[in-house]
Length: 481
Ligand code: NAD
Image (cartoon, rainbow, N blue to C red; front, side, top):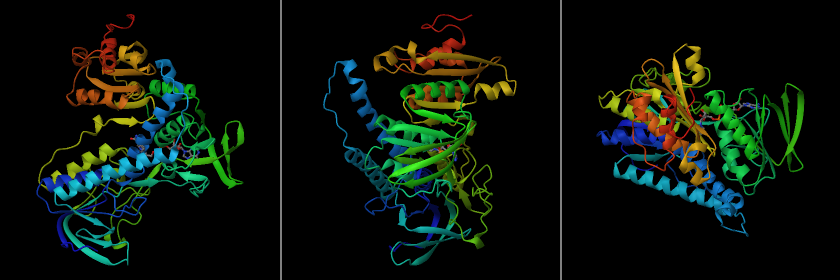
């Protein structure tokens, strides 16, 4: 264990997006801060960034970028007059690039910790009480107790394992192992067509795997605006993914280098034989070993740490941020904002988070992004609304990119025109949504967006045009009266 002072103003447990952000902001505010995390990379080196950087969102998105290039060379380059006849896939190199990027980003985070004089303690932490944390180092299991005036819990989440599909990480694998395969499976099944399942399918399907998604729910992406989920279903099916809805997996067994998967739908029980099965059936908070029983940290029945609207747990001076709580969805940027919010709260500032304008993104291709309420939710509560829809097939830049699939949908209040929701499926939707978030944060009307000049030719014109369409004056669509 390195020689560290044993008392801090703030101890942060976990160095994922939420923990990292809270540690940096605490240090910026002059608080003596330690951040404890036990993550090690494949080489056994200590690494910041948590699962989001190392095995989750960033890792997955990085691999998807490679998969998109491979797919474009195979299926689109010829249309551009580029003939790349001898394309071959070096999967270990692709994975190595992903790991290199992750390592570089992890290094940059460590440099920032050093710059801000944050003590990074490589160890496993356990909350003992409202003021004390026990840390156990990897080697020798020596235990030390650290004191702090404030403790921020940011230990994140891990994939949920299904008893019906026991992970062996060779044939039946979790979402982490799914980013480190040695070869492309010929036939791949994925349990769960949620965010993770779809992001992984987007990678492996592009690299050549015959991909089947088995989703227990009858409705595809049921949280999304139904028009967007309907479009997403159509686009992914068209890409060749085999999406089976209402298909609940009941067993998975490996044997003879294959996995036999049994699932049930309305028509009965079916059997599939695949080369790999990925389990992407949700995530659970990492709270099991976070606190000693005598700490009396209050959890709900699913292991989420109980917090009030200010991320305060039941223990005075102890806060929880990110995936550990139910304050919002499991999103890295939600965790980052909570981390900053709590650091500022500790320093005597109160800058509440507006959860209403939290953007969500699914990193598929095309991407899906949204903010605010869906048309269905607004109609169910009888809010009078107007809707503007603009297809990317009417956007100049989308044509140039060869990315004309998708649409932008803007929903505004029918009386005061305030924007209530923006839903996008299309290339770079993750970037386009930022404008909508900003507009909503400033309580903009759809007219404000419609009167804002957008550069041409850009994909952002589709957001502009959707605002114009809401007023039946889109320039690049026939007027619908
Ligand atoms: P999810 O809940 O979105 O999807 C899991 C799906 O698995 C569900 O639709 C569920 O019905 C299905 N399922 C469960 N058991 C099944 C069975 N036996 N047979 C068939 N289907 C079954 O969970 P996820 O995709 O693992 O994501 C977990 C969390 O992490 C989410 O909150 C997500 O928002 C977050 N996350 C976000 C991003 C992002 O922002 N892009 C990326 C990764 C994860």
